[in-house]
Amino acid sequence: MDPLDRRIINALQGGFPLSERPYAEAAAQLGSTEDELMRRIDAMLENNVLTRFGPMFHAERMGGAFSLAAMKIPDTDFERVTDIVNRFPEVAHNYARDHDFNMWFVLGTETPDRVAGVIEEIEQQTGYPVYNMPKLEEFFVGLRFEA
Amino acid sequence: MNRRADIKQLQAPLLDASDRQLIKATQAGLPRVARPYHAIGEQLGIGGEEVMQRLQRMLDCGIVRRIGAVPNHYALGYQANGMSVWNVPDEHIAELGRKIGALAFVSHAYHRPRHLPEWPYNLFAMVHGKDRAEVDAKVRQIAALLGESDHGHTVLFSTRILKKTGLRLS
Image (tube, rainbow over all chains, first blue to last red; front, top):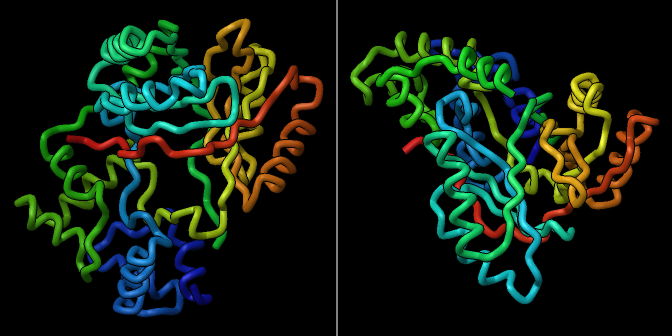
């Protein structure tokens, strides 16, 4: 990453123009050119410095229901439970964490009822309780990383 | 809870078929071509102007959070992310949550239900840092900010990604 890459990352984590030539417009503000900006973005996507370039959607507002759920699984049973939980297409992310509550996953379903349904099925298939922790209120989402 | 559900309903704006097509066409990203919105419009059989108008409406009502670069925070050196969880008085959670959410190193802050007695924490704040020590230092900053409202907290570090498919409109 050189200084221009850093300027691109720091300046373009939002506010990309909605205009006919948005790369040209954004490049002008960065002291660069349309072609150079497109090339840099391509390179950073390729090198995995950027994961995406485009609109970031707010999943809940597109419809559907979401929740965060946690489980406490003994180490000896962790792999079996992981396999069961991950088999559900409604499970979008699943992380192991260093706590008694050692499995944390995000559920995304078409309808709110389905969240409860999936949780019940996971409990039945694994034999462990699932602690449902839907968000009650959101205070802030959208970290801007400094490159 | 009912009132919250009502608010959520009111906030959920309708997406028509073209909006959904547009989301599907752009959720992997914008093309790197001089006129990206026109290129998408061509693909969907609508004009570039309409693509921009629809994206602007989705920005205005929060369906699109923002448009731009999504950095891979691991690649930028932010290796550690800790899920800090806090037990704070329910009656002050909105005010405290906003304060913590406004910190530069907090990416998400949410009010979530407790599960007593095992899980006393009702405020979740994701904290990012270059390593665990930096995350721990930032968590101490949050604790100082909360002062007497901090009735207990802990930080859960992720040790393994078990699954990551992301939320996608199908």
